[in-house]
Image (cartoon, rainbow, N blue to C red; front, side):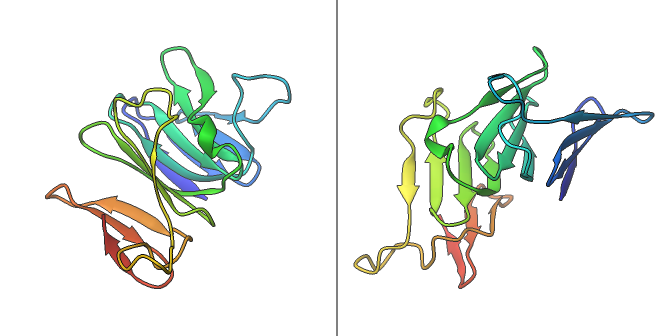
Length: 159
């Protein structure tokens, strides 16, 4: 479960059975609805982060979504991650996004890649000395100096 607070003061709670929004008095449950493209991507919510525009990035068991607070709709973003379990999301100060997965390594989306079709993909490759040491990403963090740190089960990497 993951809990964040948005800029409007709402609490967002990611659970195995959907995404809850708490306004201080009531809970609203958002769930995936089959054949409804503007619904939650998947009910198993593992990660929540705010992007630089205050939208909520949602990591699920079947990809990543974004809640657009202006239209109050969900969008699958990016489609390249639609079959991946998202374990970590790190929006950076410059508007780019780092995304960690359970078994597929790390993805980097530049701010200019608005449809998410051309990410850089980092993964374990025993033939490359500077590759990740594991495709399971546990956490991604940007430090105060702008450095990106990626934690796998085996070690910590500076991206």
